Length: 322
Length: 145
Image 1 (cartoon, rainbow over the protein chains, first blue to last red):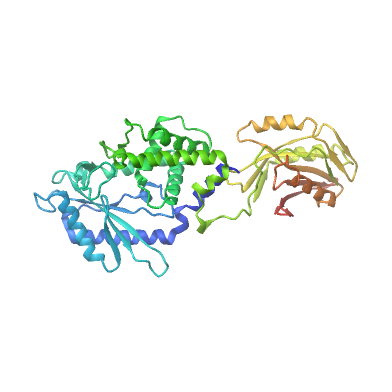
Image 2: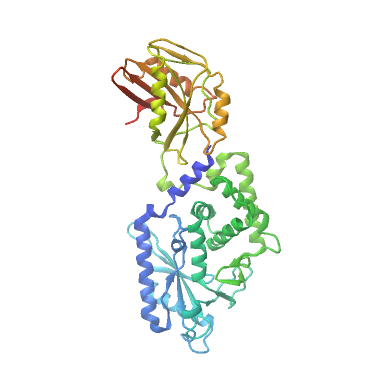
């Protein structure tokens, strides 16, 4: 089996452009929610923006990450307002606005809006991430935000107000790296997301996979073909994630360590999954297809493709032509 | 499925073929596939050191070919055996039954490892040269448009 060829096919069948209509629905819904937030909060909110994978050019078409970051002014919820009050107020607003058309859920740092299936059978999901500037009017200068942690997030406790970040820097960092080394980093990130999707509700966030891929490229000598590079990143995760001194700096705030977004047992699980995956693929190339499947909706026929059967092709010793 | 071969290479094959007139002549084709396997780039030929030929037949050996293929395989991108070519002097580039049997032999040869060998037939006369490019696909021979 040609591992590279398969991985390229996986990426091609997951191209976001193949789901143009669904993508447009997400964009339209995101804009609706953005307008609703702006109408409700007026000058208390800066322009909400999308920070999901579509924005970072690392999206795949089986899961659209649309995260709508809403940067609130410091005093939007009163001069002594807490981050918890901000989070609860935004939740209440979204719940009342969308309760008849969507499931509205409190999540780790965001509020999830999962719109009921439409007539085409499509489900649109938008995560609203409320954030608050550090000091009144400071956001336009530094773009820093404080987020509220609603649920325990890895090693970060529920109720914590410690996540200070710069989402714009996060987007720019990943987008820039993914664009600059598009044949490497972007492809590997997409493949890891395809793998994550096979695992259902996996604790590792996409953002974590994006950053650890970039770190693997920074730390190791990652060269060769697509499979060589993917293998090197999987090995990097396997060998490093459980080390006690392993850190993953948030490009939006270097004092945030994304390694803290996983508990020790979740890190063990990730390392084990990498190990098993590498071992199984080493045993049999075909297992690659289990971990990195094509999107069945856009599965490409073998038709119109040249095939070899693995080894170096050699001509038969004697052939007659006429 | 598409393929590409440089004019220079094709002209070289025609010259080699014509130099054996009135007999047929041929060799193996070397090339590589695109990453998505939809495109074949034919880069070179290896000519047989020993062969038997007449106006209506050509039988090639692989003497010396394996060593040369090893060298091509070390190149970037790796180049390998992708098919065969031969001439039809004073004739059209239409495959004979023997040609089709030869492709069957490639498919069924374990070492060949090719599911879609390519066949190039150069039909030529004093006045004109016609190229016929064919590919074997799922038990049928297709001519490239």
